[in-house]
Length: 230
Image (cartoon, rainbow, N blue to C red):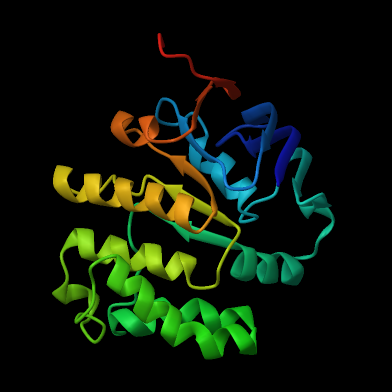
């Protein structure tokens, strides 16, 4: 479903000539419906890797293929359409619009997707998902009226509203208390299985990483599968 071939990412060195390499020769294959975690020290490039996978950033070298399609050959508008229709994002901060209700926030991606059939079904799908994540009755509340865990669950529903094939979560439990973090991690695992959505999680939290089928370790720009002894 997803394949990275010799992907590298460079950034200009601040205040001096040249550049520094964040990712080096990353090669990875992810099957449809698989779940995996990417762990590693702060500043190792985990979020950069996730942004490249999600077509939010482009690699300096190498190729990213989604169902065999090379994302590097797509223009910005085509990438935007792909992101809105096939990829869901969950971040450490929920990024819900404070002036909108929970339901309005959840439905926002359906406007960008431009899929009229999906948009007609979106309210029913939103209601079903909000019930599954325990937010029934809070549809007309604004984010400021919710707990941190409730806001993050709403963000997960928003990420899934367009029926993406790939769900990317960047430190989704990082701003939550222990109980809420446990709830969100269990929710992601359950949705990965029930929706058959491919799940890639960047996390510092070992308990979340252990719930994934595979754990990859990123350090010094290189990615390798992590063993139980590491």
